[in-house]
Length: 379
Ligand code: SF4
Image 1 (cartoon, rainbow, N blue to C red):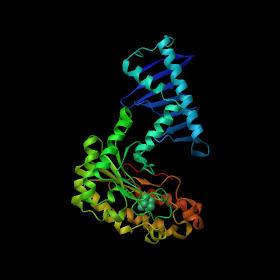
Image 2 (cartoon, helix red, strand yellow):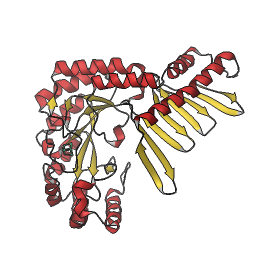
Image 3 (cartoon, protein in one colour):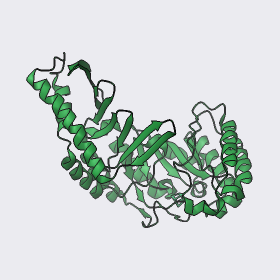
Image 4 (cartoon, helix red, strand yellow):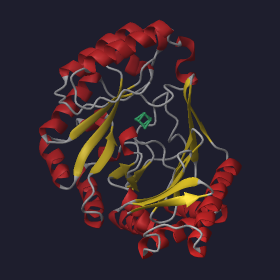
């Protein structure tokens, strides 16, 4: 549903879709709320803000220096929520007073979506955040294609926790939920999200390497997720070392229960570098795991960290990673990614890559990926 009119000589458009309400005030101020009434996106005078369910807001600015990102501090995030709700309330007030002549604006579904958005001020956002914290452990990292997924934490923490560049789960012991625990978690999420669920098109089975769990314990957990949300494809992380522990038949069984995509943190195709950063497993494990997943009909995303290991490892990192990618039965659905921000300085500070090496890696990785239908390269 799309309705538009004029407000203070500025074009106002309200768009209600199956998953979100968007209010466009001219072209310079755009607000998007999910159907549960939570602020999700704001575009204001060239700056984009993206709000997560955990209440954190990422600010993104595209200028002549490229794309700049930063997290807003809590006061700034609350200010953004209040500034946005003030805009929504102003529009709502004018709709009711008849000041706005919008054909179709009286439609009850649209009115209800605007009403919900008009309730989401900083106080409501803080209460929402508190509820989120009761249901979720902090969500460490998601693959870029799963930022809008419905995260279900079947496990928490990482079963290895050894990699020098990763501190997402250092303070969290690894824990596999029992079916009862997981079922209660899933029910709590469904109740918490309510109509906000419409925005979440897939399930991400958290956390770091949930698929490392042995099949007899994993299958009931996947089945619980599938039963609750039967229409959503399931994605998950998997470390390649654990990946070799499952057979093609077991992966097929997971695929039959909704698993569609697996993201593997390969990081590098160079074994000495994997040892240096204390990543479990070897490149051969990645190749073997990808083969098994593809044979089971599961799509694969590979994550490669450009610049990892700096000058000392640059040549081996480039050559062996390209060779490993080419040795895998990848089809035209490859995602080639780098973790945003690259490796934290503490992991590579003695070996900062020179610009020349970074460029070489980009070029060669791009060559390796050429011909794939969807190749997303972030660096
Ligand atoms: S296996 Fe993954 S989640 Fe675990 S420490 Fe290494 S990079 Fe981090």
